[in-house]
Length: 297
Image: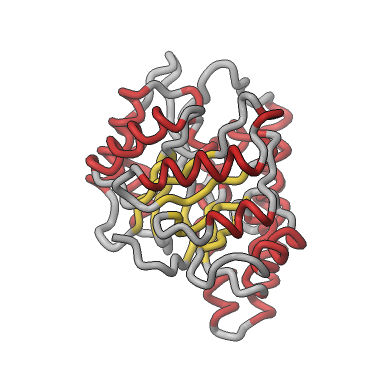
């Protein structure tokens, strides 16, 4: 079971691929072993940065199995299990639960986005949460879904006994404040991008799930631990130093950039899966320079 309060940094784990497009499970295990030695609180398998949209069910199940098997025993294991229909979301979430996932991060359904209003989202998440074996966290990521949940929807869903939190990946700090004003007291509002991590800590948010934690996990955690110890200067300095790195591995260069940065920092990025494109040499050089400026290499 998940303790109600989730604290710490969780990477949405990259999925290494071989050059032929197959999942490189050995490299996934190698990453797990490396991350087990880093200062992390848990793992998210099948997130956006996992290229989950490009994985079939067999591959997803194998990645969940390996994550559960190789994770350090004190770490929280979340699985991204959202599908477009409630029926398929429930079915896959329960499979993930049977494999050992402790919680499900579920994407807002968005294909028929014009009809995915407050009522539809509330109905979807309530129905899913009523019928799955593990706690649910909402995944709000308008950059991919073009849907940004309203404060009314979040407030309503935060009071469901099996909906325990939300990953908000907007990076919108004023929106975080609006959510904090309306959610239930025991609801885990989590940051979904490292760009908002330091401001979020000041708001009392205790958990984050973000791409940067794949390649710079200890620096992401240092922002929080220094803040908790009252060393606000160190927390802020680390956050500011990592800010350009986060921009590079998210908005600027995307998953390919994240995997390349991970390679440079001792992790196993592997290849990306078509239709994503590999980095050009000049982009690789830009990432190297950003990591050098951030004192990571």
